[in-house]
Amino acid sequence: MRVLGVDPGLTRCGLGVVDALPGRRARLVEVGVARSAADADPALRLVEIGDVVERWLDRHSPDAVAVERVFAQHNVRTVMGTAQVSGVVMVAAARRGIPVALHTPSEVKAAVTGSGRADKAQVTSMVTRILDLDERPSPADAADALALAICHLWRPAAPTGRGAAGRTPAQAAWAAAEAAARRGAR
View 1 (spheres, rainbow, N blue to C red):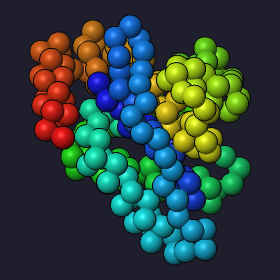
View 2 (cartoon, rainbow, N blue to C red):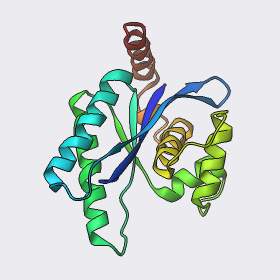
View 3 (cartoon, rainbow, N blue to C red):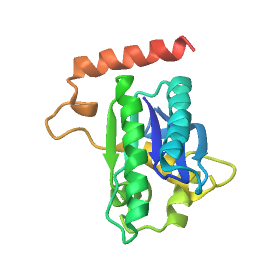
View 4 (cartoon, one colour):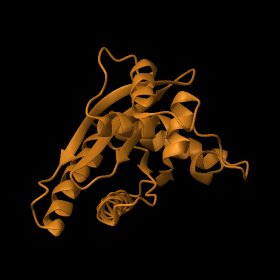
């Protein structure tokens, strides 16, 4: 399974693609940050971020997109920009038929570090170890995007007894075959 993790932000939007490996391991495919100028028109900033996300989706053909769930903060402008970028990402994935999952910051921290209260440095350190990287991903938005992808790869199966994204075992096998075919066509 290949997951694109997205840490949404209007100035810096972290992007990280991770592949699942046997034995609950993961491999880095690509990591980066989409940026937009803080003094630009907000609509144009969303277009700029959206264009980068579209290119990543086309280049990597992920099986799922994991986005950080927007949570209330004191700064309403920050929350609005983050929510708007999340919407742009979700629409881009939905247009391609790629499932989108939202994960809370504490869920991501717990999956990657074992503690839902871990700080950014601990998350970055664990992402570096899990992906066996030579250096820490930077800025923090990039590390957070990778943590989101890892969290999604390692999430438990849906409580309905179905597989990933609520699929039956047959649907999961079909999706895996389609994903392998997409990767083979690259």
